[in-house]
Amino acid sequence: MALSSIAISPRKLRHDLYSYSYQEDSTTPLVISVLASLIERTMARNKRIAQNCNLALSKNSRTRVFDCSESPDLTVQSYLERIFRYTRAGPPVYVVAYVYIDRFCQNHPEFKISARNVHRLLITTIMVASKYVEDMNYRNSYFARVGGLTTHEMNKLEVEFLFLTGFKLHVNVSVFESYCCHLEREVSAGGGYQIERALRCAQEIKARQKQERRYNYQIAHVLL
Image 1 (cartoon, one colour):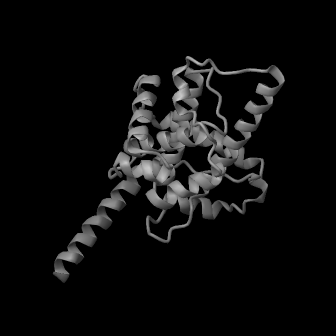
Image 2 (spheres, rainbow, N blue to C red):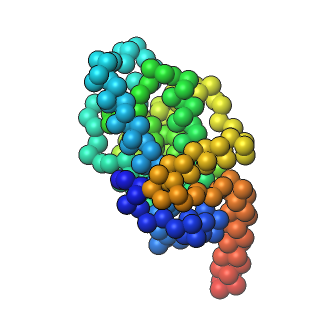
C-alpha cells in the first residue's frame, strides 16, 4: 500500500500513539500501515537484487527456519492487521518488532526478507516484542493460532530467533526514537507527517492499563 494513499493526520497519529484506546472496537494503529509499506518495499528490493544477481540463500543457514514451503496468500498489511485484531498489541510493540527485524537482518546478511519468510518473521518478532513491552501477554499457543502456525512451530521460531539474536532484546529510548525517526521519514514521502515518539508514552500506557484494570475490578467488586 502506498503511503500517499493513507490519510494520516498529525492529530490522529498523535492520538493513536499517546491516547490509544485498547478496546474491542479499536481502529488499527497507523504505525501498522507505515511498517507494512516499509517491509513490502524492502521485499520488492530484495526480489529485484536476487533476480539481477541470481542470489540464493545458503541451504545450511539457520535463518531458513523462517521459510515456509508455501507463501501464505496474505499481504503484509493484512497479516499485521490480523495480528492486531486478535492480540491488540499496542503501537510501541510494532516499533520494537521493527527494531528486532532490523537487528536480525544486520546480524545475518544472508537473510533477505521475502514472501516465503516475512509472515513467520513478523509473528515471531511481534510476539517477542509484546513480551518485552507489555505487562500482559497471550500464550505462545495463542500467537501460533493467530499467525497460522502450530504451537510447536511457534515455540521453535521463538527459540531460534532468540539464539540468532544472542538474546539481545533490550531497546533503550534513544534507539527506539531513532527507529521512530526512520518511520517518520517513511511517512514523509507520503505527505510530510510525523510519527510521534511512542516509547515516551509506553509507561503511561501501562499505567493507564493498570488503572483501567483496577477500576474495572473495583466496579465488578461493587456489582457483586
